[in-house]
Amino acid sequence: MLFRPVVQDYLLPTLTYVGGAAEVAYFAQVGVVYEKLLGRITPVLPRFSATLVEPKVERLLTRYDLKLPDLFQGPAKARETIAAKSLPADLQARFSEAYASVEQSMTALRDSIGKLDATLIGASDRARMSMWYQVNRLQRRAARAELLRNEVIARHADTLSNALFPNKALQEREIGGVSFVARYGPSLLEKIYSAIRTDCHDHQVIDV
Image (cartoon, rainbow, N blue to C red; front, side, top):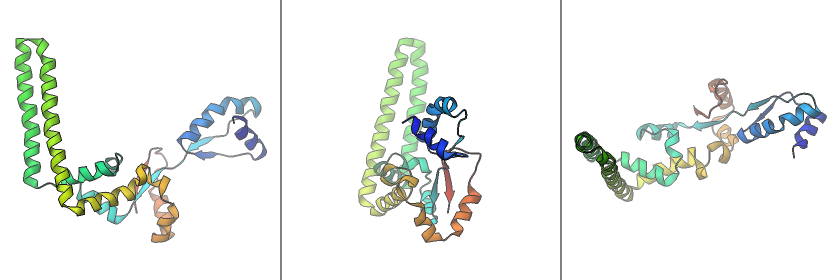
């Protein structure tokens, strides 16, 4: 397998190879073979990677105050996150107060108990984490209850997951780019070209 790209580049010299992360890593491994047999190494550049965000999807992200990474834990977590953000304002405020109260009370208790016996500080920290976990668990249950009674939330969460992280994979892996061109026309390509940051090798997010 190490000789294939070398023979290929010998027969069909390549100016620059553009590939994904795995391909770039592969070329790094065969670099020594290139040097020995060809006396040169074919330059390798990371492939451009991006997620396209359509207007409807952008509106939903804004509505629920979400970012692309929020969807990377899968559809079920996305539904739960959106449901939590859709809880009545007064209930959300009560949960925020509960978290703040736990932190304030347990921090003060930790300081005081540490002065009495430093060996109890660890037990205090575990108690704080346990209390925080129980409040978080209750909030998740409230979010699931909201999800069950509000089908719009589930529909919006599925819309976001299917558009931005389909089948728990990056959009570019599951949705053909030609489908976007078919919907928005060739001018979309010009918009993408102008939005690309060539100095950034990380995954980019582009509004359509």
